[in-house]
Amino acid sequence: MVIELDRSRALWPQVAAIIRERIEAGTYKPGERIPPVLALVTEFGVTQVTVRKAVAALRDDHYIRTETGMGSFVLTPKEREDAQRSADDVR
Image 1 (tube, rainbow, N blue to C red):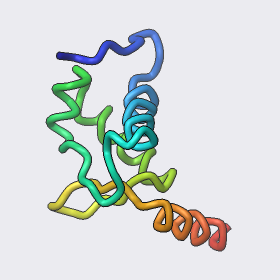
Image 2 (image 1 turned 180 degrees about the horizontal axis):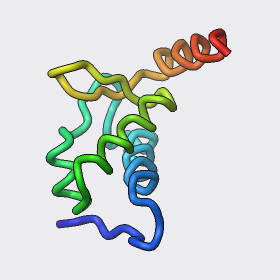
Image 3 (image 1 turned 120 degrees about the vertical axis):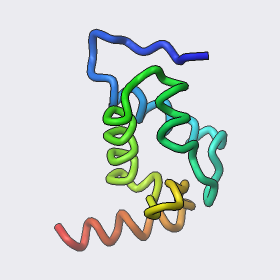
Image 4 (image 1 turned 120 degrees about the horizontal axis):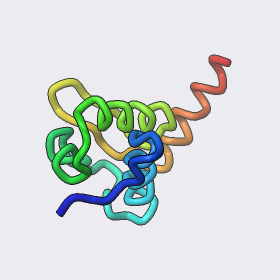
């Protein structure tokens, strides 16, 4: 089943918002890997570029961390707090 998105608006923020909601709702639990890019491409009916932009936004917002060759993992609340604090220290 493909998730219907509003094609009149940018797609990557919509994909990011849905994944963020799943994280906040506990569908994707802390420490758990989110589905791989190709699975998300199929689910949302979008390009890899769109999914990668959504994943990058979630990483920038400290919801996930990405490990090369391993995937993207949901951060725990403590990891999110630490990442946010580190980002604030850099500013």
